Amino acid sequence: MKNTGFLYDDRYLLHVTFEGHPESPARLVAIQRHLAATGILEKLKLITAEPANQRWIEAVHKIQYIMRFEEACIMGFPDFDHQDNSVCRDTYEIALLAVGGILRTIDEMMNGAIDNAFCAVRPPGHHAEVDHAMGFCYFNNIAIAAKYLQRKWEIERVAIIDFDVHHGNGTQHSFENDPSVYYYSIHEHPSFAYPGTGREFDTGKGGGNGYTLNSPVLPGRGDEEYKKMILRDMVPAIDAFGPEMLLVSAGFDAHESDLMSNVNLTTEGYDFITDEILKVAEKHTGGRLVSILEGGYNLDILPILVENHIRKLLGI
Image 1: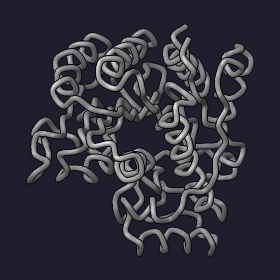
Image 2: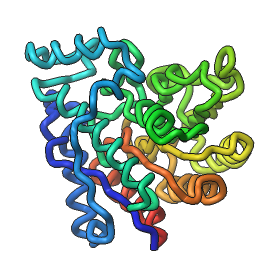
Image 3: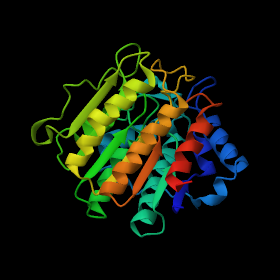
Image 4: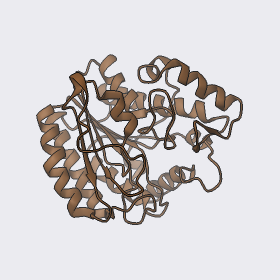
């Protein structure tokens, strides 16, 4: 059995969104309760959060944006940059805790205390752009994590795999000119799927051309299309890149029961994705990976999908 870390902090519940907002504290409550009830929690190395040093936030986001975000929360604004981005007075501090917890998890892994990890954080991050918030995201957790791996731990090649049903526009844009970070995303497109980015022809820019790969999935295609694209696109691309470290944007909103999407991925389809990611990690990073929660809004199925994902990280 692997030594798997689990990042969770009760303070993540203090980021309170407006009533009826899909990205609510109830998501983490459901996950935590389910993992405890199934006995999985006791098999994990629990990691608590500490606020990230602002210099790591500045590795991805402009200082003016960081200050603007903090001010919006201090002033008690109901949202930030868009009405979908619901905030409260605590949101800025909790966003710092989300990043800080992930960076602490990376330290645990790089120090050999854990083999891999799942980070049950909120707010999510992969839509956050350099200078504006999008899609319930304020700081781009996974982009900051990649920069941290490179700058603190001197990792030269980081791969990011994003299986949230929505394209991680912020993550792609953070690294589209950077050949040291490979970004792969499989997501729904077109239909109503947010944010409408992530086309096949988006392959990076300048020196980063060829280090971005998107696999858009048409509505209703389900498991078989995902399996085809993962094997055709993701696996050979990551093999060719040869990452030293693997980060995963783990979004569980592609499930057939989640109203945020129409691609109809099943529970077994999610198991397949996790299996293939773990094969890639074993081949290139010695099994080291950090998986970071993004979307997933059906509170009945989300905890089960997270449990299944963690079971595979544990190797049980």
